[in-house]
Length: 275
Figure 1: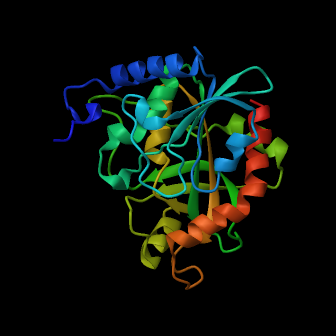
Figure 2: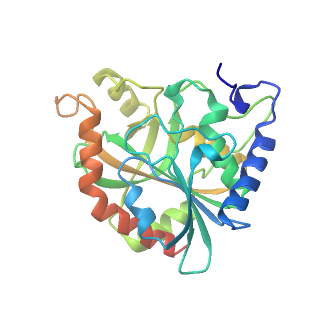
């Protein structure tokens, strides 16, 4: 007999569960408050080793509301890191993707738990397909805005949240101080788990998109609801379907992330130093 996940109960308050998760996190890490949270997607994991001193690592499933990640390339852990500045970073290596079919509450739980733990800055990273033909696999790109094609939202009821400057212009400017040649683009979240068709990629381009992927947008909305400032970054792991005519594969995504680690890890660590 399987136990119902607490966030699957429609009568449960997801914010209360996030508060409980934050309390458990504080107890297990010995850290009362975290200042910055980072969700490290495919290819970005190396940054966790570079931003500071890890003082605690916890299997994510030990914290209420978290699950083991379903995707290869995610660590399944929560790390508390002491930054050189004296601030605390919470590194989330346990992302629940929308395509897993667990519902939006579980997708955004990590963000809400981080906010409940005190984080006021949320860094969301991912591996994604690029639409701009000059982007090569391994190119890091700042997210300027998103188009949410999941037809879903983490907001429930008559909850109206302004998404102007969702991906903070201030934080993007700080990132460009570290790397002035960082390109930018609009992220388009599809439902997945299948890759987009060439026609869907052309649709994304026609409506103003430059990056296609299966995460991040719903998390960013939840982070804004929680009052966090958001920095979004994509690692272009491949050119999107139809751009080159080549077939896509998850193995290609993982390999591109692995090869880019030595560049994007230090880049993200240098950005975190400025926060």
